[in-house]
Amino acid sequence: MKKMFFTRILLLSLFNQALLTFLPGASSGLTIDEAVALALANNPDLQKQQMNRALSEEDLSGQKSQAFGKVDLAASYGYYNLPRTLAPLTPASIATDPRGVPTTVDLFATGIMYEVPLFTGFAQQRSVEIATLEKELAGLALKLSREQLIYNVKSLYVNILSLQAQEEAQKAYYEALQNLYDDILLEVKLGRKARVEQLKAAADLENARVQARQISGNIRIVKAGLSTLLGGETITPLENLSVEMATPGKTEQNKEIEQLDRYRSAALEVEKKARLVDKSRATFYPQVIFNSFYGQNFGPNDSSNLHEGDWNNQEVWQATVNLKWTLFDFGARKTARRMAAVREQQSRRDRVKTELELKKSLSEAEIKIEMARNAFHSAESELALTRETEMIEQVRFDKGATDVNDLLSAKSRNQLALSRSIAARYSYHNGCFYLDYLLENGESK
Image 1 (cartoon, helix red, strand yellow):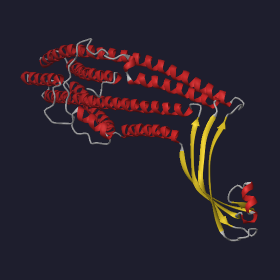
Image 2 (cartoon, rainbow, N blue to C red):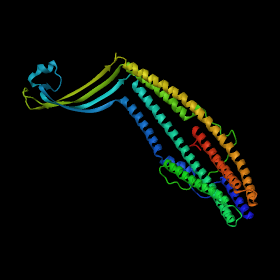
Image 3 (tube, rainbow, N blue to C red):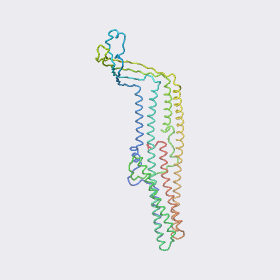
Image 4 (tube, rainbow, N blue to C red):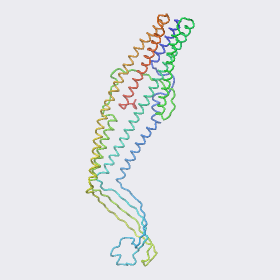
């Protein structure tokens, strides 16, 4: 009996040690790099962000094209109660043949119009500058979205591996308790153990079974989340990661805050709002627009004309320059300018807030990595102690020197230490991924 118990304890210890090595799996499952590649290719949110960048490029192109004006095709028909001439009359045309001048009450007109702004108070230039900044902001937003997606995928991937390792450890713990329960049941039948010890072992066995099912359920939940990030792809078995603890100091940030795209994005927002302030000043300048038209007026002569019913046409064209300068609008322009200035100040505060939040997040990430490293080393030390304690309690139980409570307690403490070690190791890995995300290094690794 003692030999059988020692064999089980040895097998369980070897299994626990194998779990802690975390060597890459032998199976060719879905690797973390493959998961990231699938997400970058299939994630709908990222695809939407790519469309936003395309929209910003189109907007910039549209703003630039406005500097060249627009060409319109125009056509009209009008019926009048009094006859109209096809073109304005001059004294010379009236003196030549007054009754022969074409007149009509059904006036048709067709032609081409061209309009271009000559001076807009620099509003047009500011619009192009703003669109350029928005294009750059859209590019930064796309890069940050990719970094966010990469971190989310890696985080869920590691969480699944952590839960799977805990599930395997829990199953081994359950099997060990099942074997213990079977041995106690046999001892009870032989009259060597009290029934109360069987009941205690059964209670711990049931608790271990429920814990294993809960872990399995959590794995399915996290896999569903990962599948969503991958665009609905079915999650195949994952390949294990080789996790190595870096020495303290090797996870420090390698970028200045000003180099990060999050900070650059906030700085560009300030610049954009400043351009909007400049654009609001354009309303205080005159607006100069050039217009031109070339076309034909035509229609049938009315009854007052000598040639009633005859159709006539007249070529018409014009080129004009219009100036409009708003002198007073009861404070509307000043209000718009003040609002733009306030928004600029808000963006400056947002930039400061972004800088402070980045510093805080980077500091927290480094602290959490160090905490995970310490938690892992502590859990490993505890695991070695609880494993030895479990073996001692098993010997004492076999000799009848203690009851099953001490043995079950020792097994439980050993299992908790193992779970803590697994969680701490993967928590360290997750912390490194988060630091890479903050430093925007996720895609380069």
